[in-house]
Length: 46
Image (tube, rainbow, N blue to C red; front, side):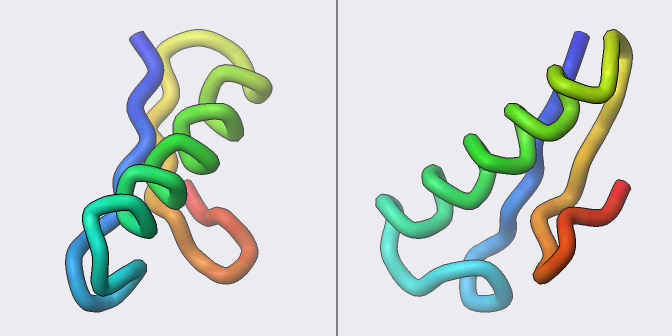
């Protein structure tokens, strides 16, 4: 299972911004392999 995380206020002010950032983090997790959790950050950190 891969997970992408973004939080309100730190990563966006609207639902669309937060979902977009969480989706980017999820894509990073999936690209890195299985069973990853990625928290959205300026450089995408895990």
